[in-house]
Image 1 (cartoon, helix red, strand yellow):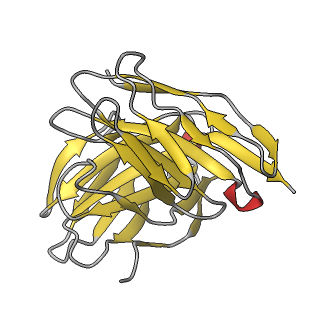
Image 2: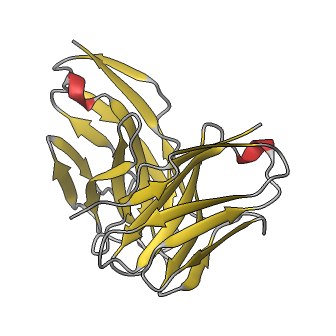
Length: 116
Length: 112
């Protein structure tokens, strides 16, 4: 079974631009969660999509948005990029909603975003 | 809100040494607890998990016991290998949302 794939793997943007990251979940998984990983703040939850609806959201500004398609693939968009948005963005897929020992989240390799 | 406090790193050990990485948590309700591992250039992999007091999660020689009285979930391995070099994250999920809350991560380097 193929794992979670994220594209692109690396991205360089300049301040003020916008960016879209893509995540393809494991076949059959209906939930996709997004996380931001930075050296200073660690791993922080951005949002979770299930059946094309955002079900849960972390404490990030409105510049961070996402969506999920009918095939469960998800995209994350960041508008008006700031230097502090430089991070590794990880997505995770799971069969159902939320993270628990009965609903494991499987992580992709991440997209490394650098904002100059 | 929920939080996870993890032992500061980095940790450097010789092969076959004993490993302990401390993890304590604060959560409303009764959280599920996890350890994830991140190898260079890769995403996170679930290492082990536990859902109730005194549960012991184990995998690949790693163990952690859910201690409700001390709100802890320390990771241990009796004999580390060079291939265990990675970053280890303690995490919890709780409440109705059940999103993962992570600790800061501990970089482990094992020398031959």
